[in-house]
Image (tube, rainbow, N blue to C red; front, top):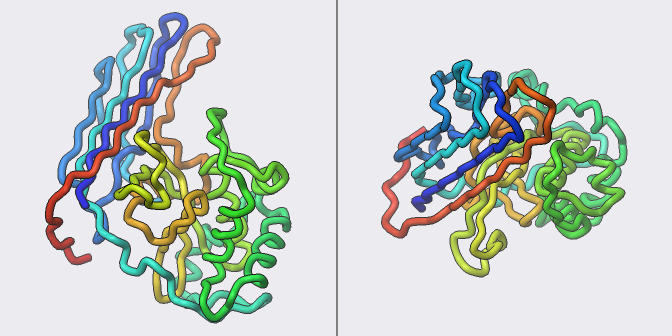
Length: 298
């Protein structure tokens, strides 16, 4: 499937400001299931750009502005990508019992250590109890433990779009029984880590390829957040509790990180009078029909 993405963010300031360095995480990495065919970046005012990889290997664009005072900042990204189904849409069933460790090799445990360690606000045992209850009430012969956790979040947590900054602590999401996609993903990650799995936070875009698809949210497409868990024999597998999706090609990943705070698409500073700035975001995600070429071998 070929997908065209246009993502435009505009910041308007109450009085002129001087812009400091900004960093963008808006470009995916090419892989066996996602290939970038074309990309573009328009920034106003004009900025000097340079690229780097962050500790997780995500492409990051640095923007350096001059000393001119400005009243607005516009960042417009365009992407033309080709997306294939993940290697396995349904994770294989792996032996798992309460108190038993996940069957990672010694080398995998070293590489995955940071993604297995609960975050400071996720050490709370509540997500672990939530996960254990979901697993114990699932069918161990037909359902992977993490699919059971994702399904339980989808069934018990009401999706609610939040414009506030930050991500709710997992316990808070459980208490409210509601949250945005990033809150539901963070709850899943906390639960998965307490079950002994490595899990990471993912930001990107959601595209509903067909009417009636679980991710079909109508004419408006969205930036989105979900999780990936590392499963023995399957590698990193997408889990989207918001839409009850597992390994689905409607999820277009851009950045993967250990915590939500590290995955902000646009971050930076400005210097001027204290003021509240609210971005105006416009996003279009469209699919183009046509035969897809086979992916490049990984």
